Amino acid sequence: MPFKTPKQIVEAACTAGCTKADLSVPKQLVLGFLAGAFIAFGGFLAIVVGRGSPELNAANPGLGKLLFGGVFPVGLMLVVIAGAELFTGNCGVITPACLTGAARWNALLRNWVCVYIGNFIGSVFVALVLAYWTGLINVNVAGSETVGQAAAAIAQAKVSIGFFPALLRGIGCNWLVCLAVWMAMAADDIAGKILAIWWPIMAFVALGLEHSIANMFFIPLGMLNGANVTIGQFLFANLLPVTIGNIIGGAGFVGAVYWWIYGRD
Image (tube, rainbow, N blue to C red; front, side, top):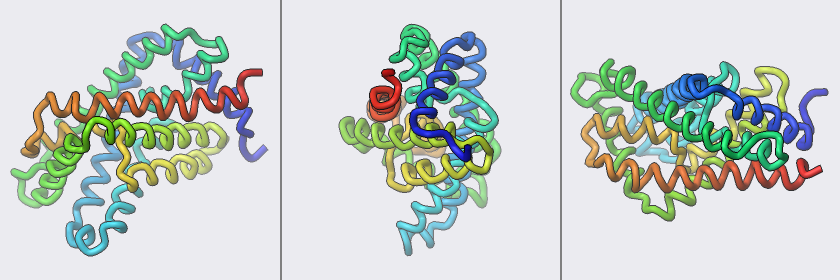
């Protein structure tokens, strides 16, 4: 069979959701750290490549967005293929397992909290240690001023969206992210998983939708590069509404909807 049917994807998601829910807290934290770092690597690459050519972005903004979004999916590829725990993906995968009764709701909440914390630590680690301290994205180091300024501009733009628009952008983002995870589960080979992941992730980034874990990299990196952003703005003007939207988009529009269609029997 070349790929799983939609009903078989729901069954695979429930199996994976039970496995994720049963992980110990230390494993959830460490795997969450890895996933946060992997997503940050995608963001790191997107800034260096997508914002490293300001002339291209000025002359053809659409192509610049496509380039920025086209390299970002490497993060989710690492999460899915190498193995890690990503909060946003888990919103869509563990929810149907709970709705079928195969996993417990308190295990879902424990996973979400532990993985979210791990994702935060991993994302900030890459932003601080590998992007900023290395000088690769640092306005104070010769040769990286352009991308450092771009990082600051990205952070300022993200906290200026507004609560409700950020929430809606979070819904749209994780709808696509969880569909990427969903389709990756349908494929039984690495090439199929890569293709399934690339298109939806490229789409959400190029469209300008909001991903809570990616923002744990983008906004702290921008703050390190002089963005006029406070910790309160980071947490409450962006991360809070985007996280709520990510939960609705992943758990509601993917996990719950596909359970209702294919998983109730």
